[in-house]
Length: 174
Ligand code: SF4
Image (cartoon, rainbow, N blue to C red; front, side, top):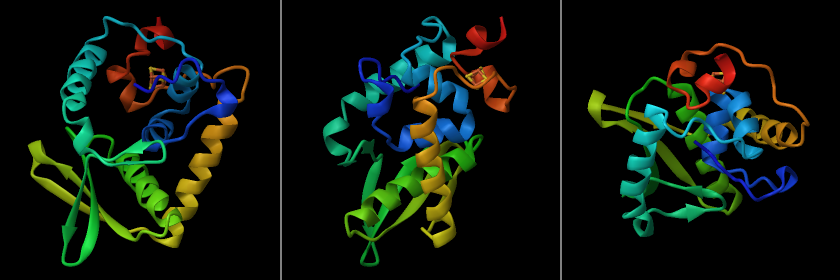
């Protein structure tokens, strides 16, 4: 869960995680940006904390570009490949937008790379190439995140498939 408490919404540092979260549900981005804490005992959050703690021990190995931290970058056939690892393919479209944003951040710095989403538990490797259409989609989301962060109230709760796993579930639906 994104949590950028302590920074004003207008200073929201947009990274791949916010792009992913916005694609899943804009409301969770607004809640996170405005430092509204989710249910601390939520099982998904507990698991997330554990995974985050595990990842922390490998942080120094994960490249950072802008406000994004990649899972891995590998070289293949003379090209850079940015790898995004997911536990499942459930939120694949959000993962595509997240990874596309990483590729765009590199392109903005003059670096060309391809992307690959890996879902080890499902034995999936999904390639991603940055196209003009994908760039337009991601730039639109990036601007939407900045605009949303400055809104005074959150978007209304709308049921999405992610709700059952979301740490804001009780906040939105109790
Ligand atoms: S519970 Fe559903 S509507 Fe509420 S923030 Fe999470 S995903 Fe969005």
